[in-house]
Length: 341
Picture 1 (cartoon, helix red, strand yellow):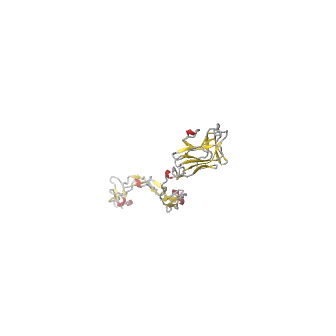
Picture 2: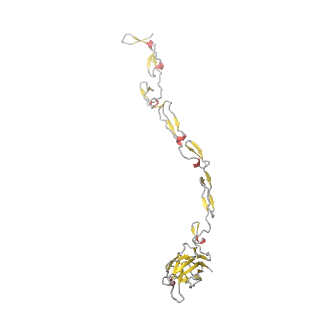
Picture 3: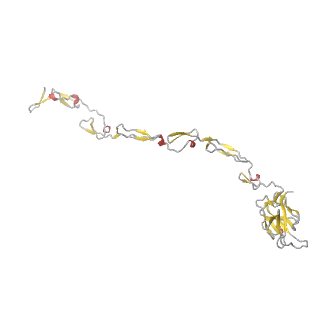
């Protein structure tokens, strides 16, 4: 057994207890072996760990045996995250124990909606509350509809229109081509070229072909009356001419005559007149008037008249002696009409 003698002292160290070898001693350091011979260390520290590679709170040595280091790696434990379709999750740096997981949320939770097949175009699909739905809405192409005398229906209820529905225009639909007062397709006619002849305004107790019916007296003993199929026009209270007019004007442009049939035996004389105002009380104020007759057909030539006029009927009574009529005399008209013959 070798010994090391220490100068200046007694005794020596037992070298047999040395167990370290060169590989146990840091490189650059020298010890003695069991024989007392110098032994150079060959142990080299070559760790590459940094603090961020070691769990936080844990200590370690790296390339410097004299420096104890402390780890800085975060301990994440079990990290879990739920994702929707198209979502992402950034995994945090640190230690993970393997119990964490990333899961995808259910499709139903991501497709909450209230559409049904009847809300989706046929052949198209959509996801509704986690289920794939195929639409069944039919398509209808654009079309042109030709109007006619009766209504036409384009069956587009519940369908998807892929084009416009066009309603063709009605050719020649102008006011000038439509009978005056008649509405066709929203156009009110103004055409007066056609004249129904004869056109009866009053006949045997019945009014016709007027927007309103009847007559209003402008002067006379009593109001105009229709009784026993005839129209009564009364004289003035003093026997002077009585007058009454139609309740509205009438376009005389396309007619040549106004005629009135007077009933025989009425006891008076009747005349026809036209005027542009509503309250005429004298023959002289009329635009024109006919000769008076006691019975038969009174005729007023209106071929020179154009436009709207009131039509007047008159009543005049004179006794054979030339005296004026008694109270209540009237002229009785059976017909009033417009004609071109």
